[in-house]
Length: 136
Length: 146
Image (cartoon, rainbow over all chains, first blue to last red; front, side, top):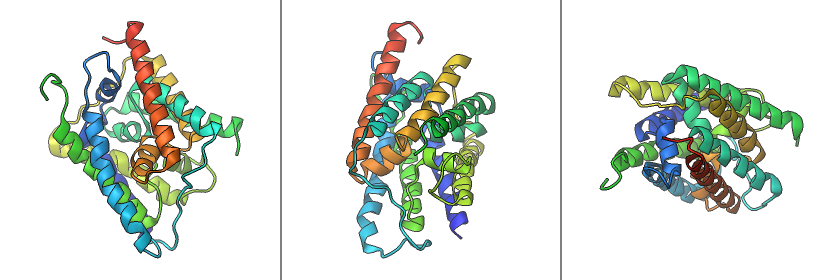
């Protein structure tokens, strides 16, 4: 049951990325391109996504446990550290260079398989490098 | 949009709602954050802890599945990648390394964290957005963009 819910959520997430135009790296980079032909679409996507999630966060305290799982597994929200800052900056540079973040890159495997696979392979290599160089 | 011919705000908002509902299903249904970088790392065996591997793998599998379904229904979905191989590889390496180091990407920090008003996610999102704007600004200044 939990696996089915995860597959359904992933499928809806991927469909949302495609509907919103976020599986198009050129459109994403156009959002970051303030000095070029700026495309604000990404801001509307974020607004649309944050709305249901804000409702979900408001509902969460009323639930003793998740609907189909035994316990909550939520990250802490307060501690700021150098890893967070450095990681976000490095991610942002990569996002700007290619116009891709992890979700759209994986979803695009179905749309532009060759370049998406190349990007995802490099992304996995970056994740592996982090695991080797900076184990927790 | 007037003056912004390429923008598609209604489609963006509608797709955004779908993404937000998917993330809400993960939160309220499974008690987990729909953070794609973390779930990908977990599915690929590159992270300890976190979601069970099968669950992470099925969520990740759903992403191209959902995009394929939309392409099927709509006829096509634009996906214009950069032509440059070095750009794709460098971008991928930095995105993979940075999202692990910073514990999240646009979905985990951006969608799930901002909607929770998480200070960590507010800082992370401001930083990766800022770095993204600056990177593209410099690319344009150096003549790397049309």
